[in-house]
Length: 111
Length: 112
Image (cartoon, rainbow over all chains, first blue to last red; front, side, top):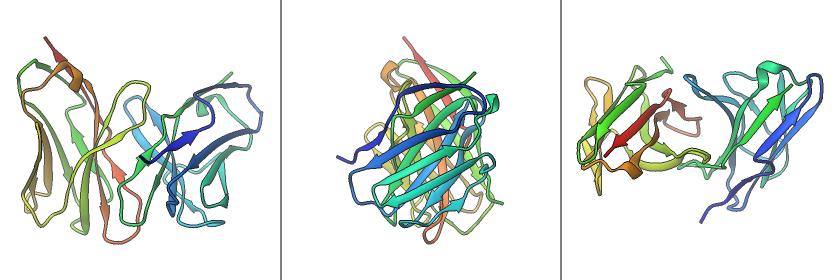
């Protein structure tokens, strides 16, 4: 079974902090994605990566950056956390040609 | 053109009834249409998917109906059960290696 593991289920941080969300997949998938999920807004793509050291902006990249130094790991970075970044963050991976597999999410609260 | 519009936003169905969720798209280059199911506290999981060369795909109680000319596709859940209560997302993407475009989700509640 494909396993996408997000390092924290719940995280509480303060405004202005630099926040790291980690995601690891164990199936040697080429593609990895970060989404945020908010009620009524569905899943919105923040960043994605099709290969190590490559990254592409999604629909809402402002305030975020990513890092992919190894194929299995994709990190989302909030450079200076703000309260409007309180959300559920979902990581996903896929082999080229689908389907996409999701982690169980990190619920991030920025106080 | 990149949007996928999903309706309804929420749905309440009696146990044993049929649940129907609809999605519409504009981009005729979309060639893959998956549905994801998400339970509370979990990430979405692939439920069933279809390509535009077929009009229907069935897996157990779940059926995707696809209407290429109308640019619509729908999920039917037959004999709906309380365990089907979840949020359902439709999605689509283009030929080649491109990200999925998701609908905004439908929260389904199946009541006994």
